Image (cartoon, rainbow, N blue to C red; front, side, top):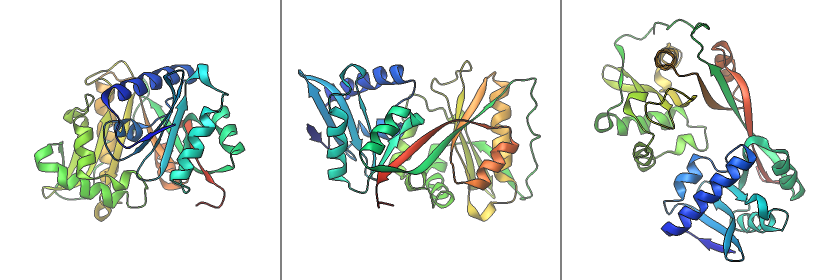
Length: 293
């Protein structure tokens, strides 16, 4: 077992290759974006297992205590997954271990290790077929509200502040820092044209961020990466205006559909997205050791 806080470039490449292999085999990525970004930083603990000199298993323990891992399909059922999980829990007994895609094998493995389901994240999807009308773009009740394209120099600091207030109860999204934002702005997929901000009296009070895996691509579904409004303007139509405008733009571009992630226990958000025509397309499950909330 190799445990390290910093991965050399060769190790990062090896893990990304392993990730691609596992994702293709299982049909879902075992690592979320935060775990992938952590490969390049110093904010996580990286666990690796080797067989005959080849990395065949990997797990990360992020600073927030979440754990994600994978084992090469050809090296499963040899104890590597158990070794990774035991080491991760030794580092963080309170860890929340993700089973992305809620694959039956992953859930069975984690349950057998004494972990219980504690959190559910749903994937929602909506097609953007031109023949299927979108809800009309609503008018906000807020005066002096206008939409604009994100400008990093003007908006970054304010974006972080609004995001923190809007997601104060969310364990990952609400903790994003300016450095976290800058890291995402530097990703190859980032396109400022895909982030709309709502300005009221020139103060940023909301945003909607669309993520295309390839900038400008219109041949695959797009993720509604984040949508939020400052608590001071919630209930005044700002979120609806942002979302409707983003969907209308994406459909005009020819994008076939959109997806987004929402906590399964967020009933108000689920009701809202249902009215927008979104349906459940998948789920991720987080599990914890018995007695660990």
